[in-house]
Amino acid sequence: MTQDEPPPQNTLKAVASLEGLDNLAHIGVAVLFILAAASVLLYSFGLFLLQVVHIANGIHAAGTEAPHENSFLQISLELLSGLLFAVILLELLRTILTYLIARSIEATLKEFLLVGIISLVRKILLVGAQASLSSEGQHAFLQEALGTLVSVLAVLLLIGGLILLKRFYERA
Image 1 (cartoon, helix red, strand yellow):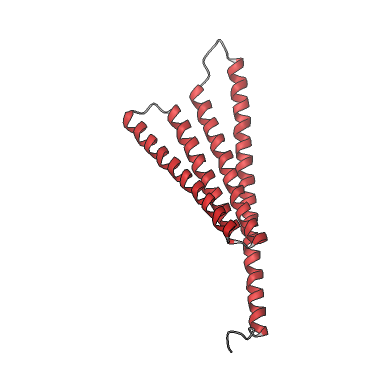
Image 2: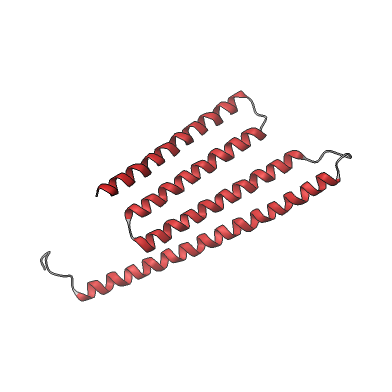
């Protein structure tokens, strides 16, 4: 068989079967992402309700004893983390859907770069929020500041990657 000859029919059927199984596996992963995002959102909703009760108790107890502000802030931080994590899961789901629909490396790379940017921004926000709640010393602050700086540089690199990707495929 030379390069100009079409592949045998049984090879084409085998490839089509494998592609079908590949699509089925991707759909299974997508369903799991939806379930994971839904569970994170339900958990976050429970935290939100806990915060509402905490606020109501704080208003009710005003004047008698100070509500535990630290636990309120910790729960708020966990709520923020959960919501941002759900966004990341949904963006990963979008990556799978883009692959299944477009079958384009450009579109898939773009989605992965966006997931990376969102993940890093989540990290920056959470580190900043945790640092504002923490009363650790100067050394811990410098470590967090350095970590945040590295994350910001990584975000800028990923944004640069998005720009280069767009320019490369516009020229092609």
